[in-house]
Image (cartoon, rainbow, N blue to C red; front, side):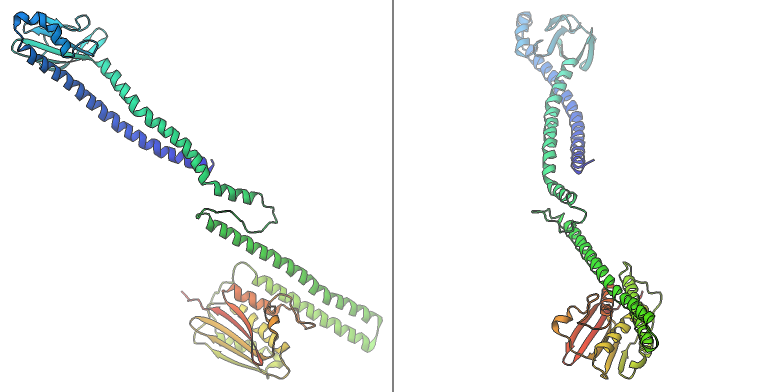
Amino acid sequence: MSLRLRLTVLVAAVFLGFWLIASVWMISGLNNKLEVNFDQRLRSTAFMLGNILAHVPKDALSKSLPDIINASGVNTEKGLTCQISSLQGSIIASSNSQSFPNQPSLNQGFSYLSSGQAQWRTFTLITAQYKITIADKVAERDVLYHDLLISILIPPALAIFVALILLWFAIGTGIRPIKLLIHALEKRGSHDLEPIQLNQPLKELQPLITSQNALMARLAKGISREKHFTSNAAHELRTPLAGILAQIQLAELTQDATQQKALGQAKKSAHRLNTILDNLLVLAHVDADTPLNITEPWELDSLITTVVTESNNNNARLTYNITASQPVYCIPSAMLTIVCRNLLDNAFKYSKANTPVILAANLTATALKITISNHAHINQADLANMATRFWRKGAANGAGLGLSIVASIAEKYQGSLTLKNNNALFIAEFTVPVKVNN
């Protein structure tokens, strides 16, 4: 069922429900009021005739009765029947003697009489001289009652029907932006990730359009990044593989020192290939949708000390400082180990020889910050590209993945990586917010 039809059916059900409830209440009240009014007409007519007859002399009664009855509105055309009889039961006058039965046993008050196929509602008034009976047919009451019902119920029913037709078109106009959105989505190709553009969209649809555009922007960015990553990864892997093959072929054709040199170059290329593959695996792990769960807290000073110890020949250049008064809950120790190793490797590799490298690890109640400073100066134009995957300056060594891995880890844990110059120093600052342990 379409949204348009569903809304129309729901609104129609509400309208019809209210109409039926109002109709039942109105019909029951109308029936009671009509019965009371009809009976009151019988009673008032009887008393009016009684008052008139009380002032008519007996010798003039037979001559005056037809005029009195007509003047009182009691005749067959107007639906009322009048019968005047003596107290002994003999009929003195009747406006409908053919069909209205003579019932001398009627008591004063309201009653029902049956005559053939007709049923009468009567009111009998007994005066000092006469018994006056005023009656009308129950069938005529029913006809009037049904005519009133038709005149009362049919116009609202027709109005509801017309209102539902207008409502159908009104709902169609109201949901037109939704149809435009559906049409815009249906006509898009499988590779079309451009933002959805609608003229004057509904306020309620704007969050949906915004979230849809944000989703497609993320998809476009992810697809572009994957294409770029695949292209660069293939290029980076092809270079050391070609070097290995070339050096092995050279080793096969030479001997002694030349052969050993070729094998050494092949080993170096294989080591570089292994490093690239390790970085690609780390990057794929970091790019996974779900962050690693932190099963237990860990100590920052212990991790930094281990990373510094593994620095091998660079220990003499490295100075570090740790400020931490609590365990770490905000990031897994394996991720921070990768961050520290990559930042230190970058600092040692691209700083001036024999210049110090300073590592500062600071854990506060709000953030964990790793800051590494080394003697180097990067052009402002290159700072924006340093965290780009596979980016390298000129003929620099490496795969160009170290800082991009750090940036990906920072993004994964709602943190940041800041690269900047400070006079003669180049500073890399990795920050992640601290999460409260529950």
